[in-house]
Length: 148
Length: 148
DNA sequence: GTGAGATTTTGAATCATTCTAAGTACCAAC
DNA sequence: GTTGGTACTTAGAATGATTCAAAATCTCAC
Ligand SMILES: [Mn+2]
Ligand SMILES: [Mn+2]
Ligand SMILES: [Zn+2]
Ligand SMILES: [Zn+2]
Figure 1: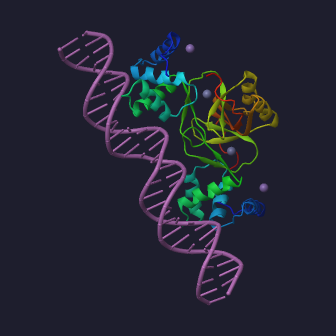
Figure 2: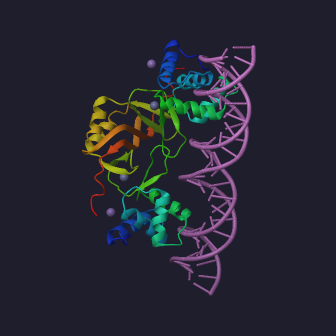
Figure 3: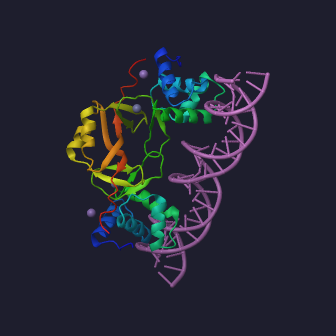
């Protein structure tokens, strides 16, 4: 089931949208709620299916629009793996992604500051990077969803 | 201009294809030659345009086929950035990619073994990664192509 | 030279994403 | 409370990179 937003999350949404002169709408709230409910890096289509459970009339175009808006104001990150459909991640902490070869599931991998520093250090002088993306591909011990 | 393959490169091609039971064909040779001639991470379309200069009748489908074959036998790597067209890279040494925000050009960044190790070390137990992809996005001092 | 299998070619199909144009919601001014 | 402007949403069409299917060509062992 998809819970409502907590007070804190609603403020987070409100503030991030407000900063770029945009408003909280029922659709944006629904899509954001879906993203926070299950942090499993869903594709646009998965977000769309889930959002419809909560708001049956919402359109696919709107889901695309909301997600683009959220990326634009820094609420979520896009996650791309090879040529697969884009996935979305509401985890704002610096982290890498691990895609499980077998299940296709994407896991967050915490990224300690010293590793980020060591990565930056390999850039030759003159190269100035704003974004670093790191993705692993391999097998992950099943271990299933932690809580049930 | 697109040079012919060196003896060494032709053997490399021959051997890698042979290992997976495939043959050197004029088209494969042309596409491989194009990739080695300018190591600028061309898209399929760019490879196609360049290959036609050397072999006017070659088809786009064949370029796709050749590139897929090369990736399959480890002769080249695919390089993906966000949702852009796939690019191809014949540099087999471990390296990261830097995409220049302004020019769109993609540069190779050498990846020292200790940095690879530090990256592997952030994986929790149970995660076993075969492939690590690292890509930077930012500005690179123009500095143009080194040799002319 | 024949035939089997691999490769290439053309053109159609796929499918995630973007675009367009029309419809709604909201709000402030009158 | 009507009007008009603006932001937002919607349905459906368009796009474009990639993949697929089927027919043509090549290669090589026999
Ligand atoms: Mn917060
Ligand atoms: Mn070699
Ligand atoms: Zn994530
Ligand atoms: Zn490269």
